[in-house]
Length: 204
Image 1 (cartoon, rainbow, N blue to C red):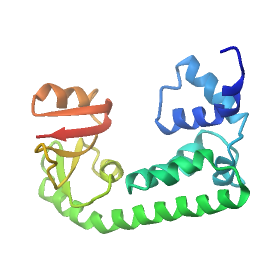
Image 2 (image 1 turned 120 degrees about the horizontal axis):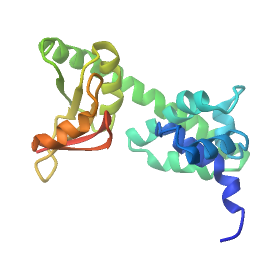
Image 3 (image 1 turned 90 degrees about the vertical axis):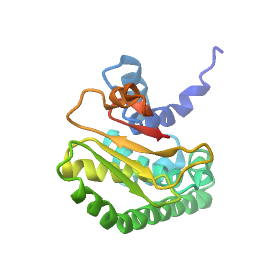
């Protein structure tokens, strides 16, 4: 459109690229990230960055976790407000809410870990784990990350509840295979969507 409006939003584009763990060997991604790190405009991102520099580590460990927590516990409206709020008092309020959402998410995860650990021990001789959790929130991916770090094998975590079409929904994480998503999809038993070794899973 021959304007520079997008230049004021490059910090948001940068945040999205880093948060989604996009390929940083792609020149366009590197350029957008570089521009974003050097042009921090968003008030909430500034607040979440605190005294730390706005860089990949800041986005991955300070910004993305609180935004993702809101989405996972079905409070998307606060995640959206984080990117459009600019009034100082409102910015402070939304940052407090974001951090509270993260605490709420972590509390539920802590409560489910004993159940998950028991299932892991029951499958300890398997080459992969298939685990079930009872929750109304989208926290399967976070739990899968934790289990993956400890047991270092492919993980599928599903919500123990069928949808109206008879499907279980959840997340998978994997190490030790080149493309776990491909294996899942080629099985004909389920479908996976997202990254090769970190994505959502639907099983009928």
